[in-house]
Image (cartoon, rainbow, N blue to C red; front, side, top):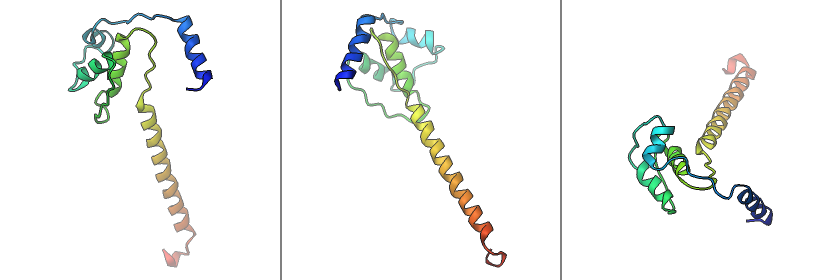
Length: 120
């Protein structure tokens, strides 16, 4: 990590040396912040791995609650936690793909309209 990043992390740690967890258990986090929706298969195990300090590679389909795993774990950890949602990257990819299709479709339409009517 570059020195500037180290300094920034130290500055944040100096201002907020301890931030208490806002929930005592995964179930409390679920009930208070996720409307009590039951855990889906694999979520509780992944939360436990994060809380134990282990690496967690979670492969689940879109919309199955991957972000919720790390959000719930963050509510149970002391200190500051940054959760970056992969949904934003997915949305950007989808917008780019749609734009590509629209641009290609526009090119095809304009190319077809430039052809003489006998060639259409």
